[in-house]
Image 1 (tube, rainbow, N blue to C red):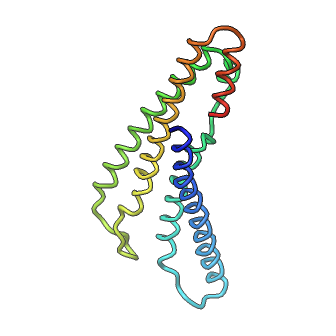
Image 2: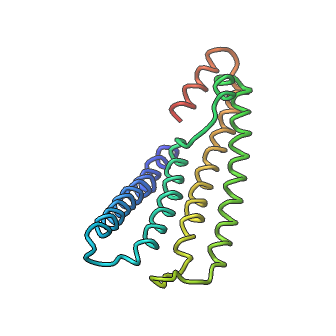
Image 3: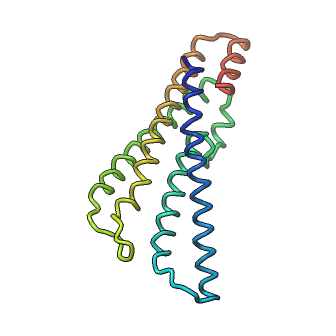
Length: 180
C-alpha cells in the first residue's frame, strides 16, 4: 500500500516541478521583453506588470508546496540534530510536525477565505483578482496533505520507537525513517 502511494505521489511532484519551471520560463521571457522594450521602444507592454505579479505570486507559493512535498524547505535543525536517533528526538519531531500542520491548515483556510472574498478585477487586463490570490490556498491545501503525511510518519516513528528495545531495534527505526 505504501509503495502504491509513493508511486502515485510522483505525478503531483512532477506537476509542481513543471509548473514552477514553466512559470520561471514565462517570468524570464516577460521580464526580458520589458527590459528590451525599455531600450528599444517599439511597443508598450502595459500589461506586463500584472502578468509579472501573477507569475511571481504563483511561483512563490507553488514552489513552497513543492519544497514542502520534498521536505526540503528551510528549517532550523539544531535541536533536531542533537536529539536525532532518540525517542525524545522522534517525539520532538512529531510535536513540530503537528504544530506546522496546524499552522498550514490555518494558512490554507484563511487564504481560501481571502481568495473567495476578492471581488475586484485587475486594472489593465480586467482579470479577476482571485487569480492572484488562488495560488495561496492551492499551495496551502497541497502542503496540508503533505503535513498530514509527515504527522503520520512521525506517529509511526514514535510508536516503533516505543516497541523497539535495544540498539538493534533503534537502528531499524532510524533506517526506516531515512528510507521512509
